[in-house]
Structures are given as structure tokens and as C-alpha cells.
Image (cartoon, one colour):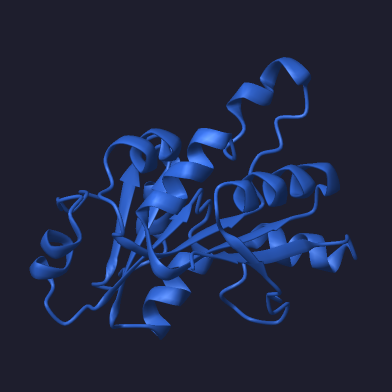
Length: 188
């Protein structure tokens, strides 16, 4: 699937498709189930999936015709958010079940570093949100602490278990009756 080129400045992203008024990014879209369904439901929003593994865009392409308001990037999301996205560009981020990198020596690979959380704050528009869900209790505590320390305010948020826009991991973990920790964090 050829990637569609676009600029990192909000005006340039939306100028390429003038009927779009919002930009939402899913980091680690996996099988792209949430991303594709969300793009179909909200045709006025540009949805961008950022995945470090090249297989994710290929999986999305195999699902059939993709919505016109969907883009996929194969890159490191921490780097892109921290270095490429312009300030106050993004309306929402979605991060569902990020890799917990269990071993202590691998913790440096976790997505929610203090630098990443500051970059999320910088790139969110006022009133923008980051939606987070995980089944790993210690990781959720760390994510919560770092996002609030970056200046984002936690809000209650409940994902919908029967919604087809749920991620594959969320469906699997709910079927297993695992405890799911989820919250939204908003930029004032």
C-alpha cells in the first residue's frame, strides 16, 4: 500500500483534504480495526496511524478499501511526536494497549517517557485529548503520573466493549475478563 504524503503542519494536512476539520492519531494501530472503523464513522476527521512495524500498514491494506480520511505511517511515534509534529496540531491521540516492555532493561523502550508526554502536551490543541487503555496496572499508574505531570488533566472515560471500533487487544482482554484501565487526559 503506498503511503500518501502529507506535511506535519496542520494547515497542510487539512489543505490536502479540505472537507476535513480534525486530526486524530492512533499510535500502534496493530490490525487497524479501531482506526478504520473510527475513520468510517467520522468522515470529517483525518485519522493517522503511526506504527513502527511495517506489517501494520500491510494488514490495513488487506482489509479492503480504506477510507479516504485514513493515512498510515511507518515510523517511531516517540520520535515523530517529539520532533516532527507542530505545536497545537493534533485534536486527539489514541494509545490502546501499548507494549509494556516487562524487563527492567527494556523500560527505556516504553512509549510514555517524560519527554514523550511533554511532546503530546505540546502538540495537542487546547481541549485536545489523549485516550489510553491498558490491562497492565503498574504501567497505567506510570502513564497516569507522567501525563498529569506534563500538564494534562485526567478525565474519566469508558471504552465500549461491544463497539466494533475497539482494538483487537481490547476485545480479547474483555473476553478474558481482564481488568482494563482507561482514561482520557485533556489539555486545558
